[in-house]
Length: 459
Ligand SMILES: Nc1ncnc2c1ncn2[C@@H]1O[C@H](COP(=O)(O)OP(=O)(O)O)[C@@H](O)[C@H]1O
Ligand SMILES: [Mg+2]
Image (tube, rainbow, N blue to C red; front, side, top):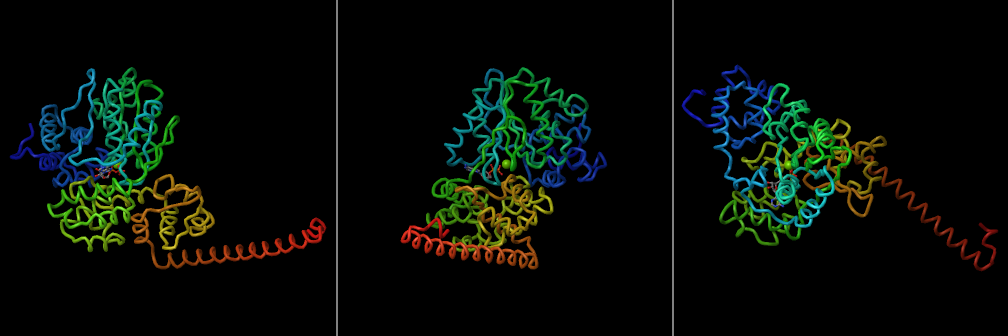
């Protein structure tokens, strides 16, 4: 029995942690979670632990069966109300519900549902906050009728230690955690003849470990399908990649901003003209997370103040949603999460690419980042921080990413980058000049040869 006056989840977690003689960091390590997420749960700033998080914590705290029941009841009380799970031939659809409305994406949703019926592993890739999780949940719900034994959501964002990747999948499947029962073999054995869809959400930071789990499931469980979201591909055999673009800046992105601004304050939308909302959507490149954060500012800021803030680091830092998961609370946290996963060389390349006059071709990018930088630039593209756009060979960096990277760049570093760019532009101008001269010479020769009929001899 868990003693103590309150049966609220946060205080209960703290009491049990102290009873086990663990610091937040120690418990985090044992459960394979981040210390931040434990702190957020204890303080009540994160109010709705995922089932899998609760499960990992219960195992790490060594709770008895009775204590686990109380623990689960306290955790579930915190969950926002969600529609009753749909039962499909004994299968359950277990997906997180949102209290807010969904905009746009009809085409992508249709494409992904169709792709899932052809491919057993589909990965939705894109930068942080572009809407991967939200869309994947819609897609999984739409696909549910095709998987009689249900849909399960596996939240990987708070998982820190890749060694626990399969435990968190096991927890989502209600396989007891700890010991050999949650081994990868046990998961494969459980799902061998089952027709289920697993939504593996936020794989990027544990991509390799998750790829191992995915490969085992695809090989050993012929009727299991996997929909993953990640900032970079999982690189497993048979993976179909869907690169997710931001929302349509002329339509869904504006609707999203106005909707969230209206919800933020009764005056929110009224303060904002349609033109200003369209400007916000455009300046934030149609990224839904950035747009929601801007909308939250309408509580405290006027239209002009928000528009003035958008381009700068204050927006990345200050626009905040306290109720969001840790890595999505501010844009700085979202971008920092991606940045932390990069190598030193890749970080340097990203900072160089934040240079205001950054070239938008692949050659221009290489010139800015230095002679050995091609693999680092490739990796920035793979991790969705840099985007390939049409026409081919054009590279794009979202404005929020640029502002974030620029805020981390030192002055001396940028002087160096500016110098590289100046030299590159200089050499291009020389080439152009030379090419121009060559054209003049060629034209003159042609005109001489056409007059004399001696072209071959002249050339
Ligand atoms: N199409 C959409 N309509 C409404 N809200 C959206 C849409 N796409 C994303 N959002 C919201 O934007 C935020 C970031 O989306 P999310 O799916 O978590 O991004 P990602 O998984 O790519 O980091 C979330 O609060 C989500 O609810
Ligand atoms: Mg996500």
